[in-house]
Every structure is written in structure tokens, then in C-alpha cells.
Image (cartoon, rainbow, N blue to C red; front, top):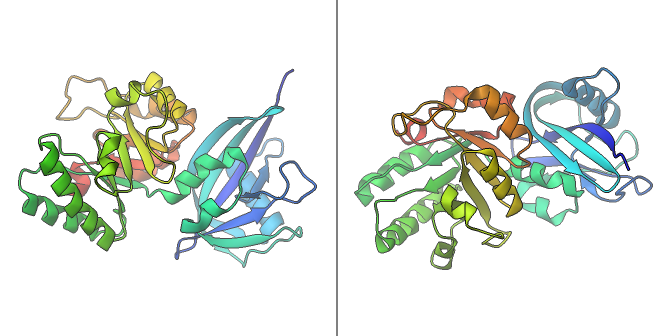
Length: 314
């Protein structure tokens, strides 16, 4: 059976207080009663953004003023292949309400997991809850210097996802630093992701684990609970496929550009990076030679944002 293809534009409308607008599917349609991000199918010759503006006007009575690409999700159901072209709406005019009789509700990000969604929406939930900057800590020998630099970084309200990477520390020193970093991240309402063995979470109640690519490729299933974040380092399509297969929530992909630490590694460049992101099925952070100046470019090609050491750590 040839499956029909369905292209849908959807909106992640997020208020300044972090609440997300959800709409409930009518009971008489496919997957009725489930909650979703508002939007609808593209009409002939429409772009995703044109369809989004039309659908939100018709469904919610609002007019988009400013939006950015968030994520594109390809998903196969038994009877169809669906592409969700998801945009984050930053500004709009009007007060949204269900113009077609559908229920709509502003929901705190922390409560999104309590709502039943169609399966294809799950990567969107991750993208909505993740920031657009991912700070990777530098190798600092002195704990005091490390904590000072981390706190300076966290004073920036955009830095709310931190990976503790410290390959030069032994196990005990790493756990000590992780405890200190976690306390600091909690103070600033940031998430701390530990780089290394998933068993680290048995000792430190951090927010998740980031797997090096070698560890990623050795796994056959997701190594941590679903209430923790699982990230991974990827460098080629095979590693991206493995990350999806074991249920990673997000990945970094590198190197986008030539970096001082890996001068002989060929960079992927924006064009090929966009092709890889298109089929990743999860949020992807661009890593390697990128700075904050690249965030809009990264998002324009479908990435979650950028991951960096130098530009955020300094």
C-alpha cells in the first residue's frame, strides 16, 4: 500500500512566562481527544509559514507577527507519512480562542508531560522544553575558578542547559565538581547534564547524561529513565541513527566549522548540516566553531540552536 503524504504546519506558541498553547483534537477526527500544537495541512502552493499564518487566523483568531523555525519532524503512521513543519511563534496579535469549537489551553512547560499527544508530537515537546544555547564547560583544574566561570555564565538568562565535561578529573574529583555545579545550576534554574557513564546518576541527581559518541555506539537501548534528559555527541549519519534508535532526547552534531582543537577534521558546513538535521527526528545542536552570532542561522536550517564552550564559557 502506498502511504499518503501529509504536510502539516504547526505552532509552538510560548508566552514570556513559559506557558505553551495547546489545542485539543475534536473527538470525531483521527486521534481525537489528544492534545496537539495548533496548525493544519498546507494548501496547494503554500509554504509552511504561509499555512501557519492562515491556520492560526482561522483556528485561533490570532495574527502572527514574528516566528522562527523550531523543528521538522518526519513520522510514519500505519496509513500515512506525516511531515510536521513546526515554528516557534514569538509575537502575535489577538487573544487565542477555539474559533472552531476546540478546547485550547495555556500549559506550563513543566506540566506538558501530563497531556496525551499524538506520537509524532513527541520530538516537538523536547524542542519546546530545550533552550537554544547549550553550554559545554571547559577543562578547569581549579574548582573555585570553575565555579566562578560557571556562575558568570549562568547570570545570562539564555544559559539554562549546561554540560559538565571534565575529562581530566578522576572519578572522585568529577563527582565533587558535579555536586557543586548542580547546586549552582539549581540556584539559577538551569539543567545540568553530566558527560560520561549513565551510572553517574546513581550518585548525583543531575538532570541527565550526555553520551560521548563511542559510548553511544556501544548501547542497544536507552540507558537512563525517561524522566531524565539523554543527549549524545554525533559526527555522522550512522551515529544520528543510533541516537534515534536508543531514544536520545537531543544530540550535538560536529564539527560545523574547522576548530582549533580539531584542525584536521573536515567540517560539515551548513548545507550538509541541514540535510542531516532534516531526518534526525530530534533536536540537534550545531557544535564546532559556532558562536551566538550563528543561532539564527542554525535555527533557520532546522537546528535547536548552538552548543559551544568558548563563546559561552568566557
